[in-house]
Length: 216
Image (cartoon, rainbow, N blue to C red; front, top):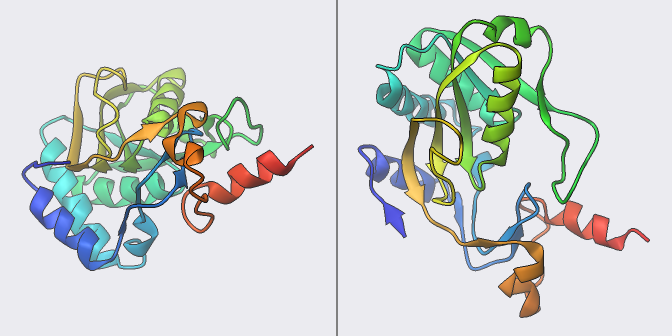
C-alpha cells in the first residue's frame, strides 16, 4: 500500500526508474525482523543528482522546524543527513554502530563519536534516515543525540515502510517523502520461513542472518 504525501509521486518515480523497489522475496532487516520487500537505496546513492533532489524535498517538508543540526545513522542516514543539511544550510552529523551485537539485531547501538556529541549538545536536531523499516536506527540515533545534550525536534526519512509512527519514535513530528508499506514479522512468526522461502543474501541482512544461524 502506498500512502501519498506532497512528494510521493516524484519519489516513487525515482525509485522505480532506479529499480530500487524489490518485492516478492524474503529479506531480513537490521532489527532481525523478516519481510517480503526491500527498498534498495544503494541503487540511488551513486547518483548525486537524485539524492540531492530527494533531500531537497525532505528539507522543504521540515524547513519551518528551526533545525540547527541534521543527524543520521551511518551509512545511509549519513548521506541523507549531509544532503538535507546542505539544503537547509545547517550543520550535519552522524552516528555509528558500537562493535558489540546484542539481542536479535545485527549491529550494536548507535553512538555519537568524532566530537559529534559536542556538536549536537544544546542544539535543535533533526534525526534522519534513508528508509525507515522498524525505526530502530532512528530511535537509537535520537537517543544518542539526547544523551549528548541535543534536543530532538523531529525525525525524517526519504521512505517510510509504514511500520512506525512519530509517537513510536518518541517525537511529535515525523516527515517522509513516501510511505511504501511492506509487512514485517519477527523471525519466530515469519510466514516466509514457515513456507520455506529462501532468504535473500544479496540485499538487506540475509547473509548475516544465515551466518549467525550456522554458528554452533
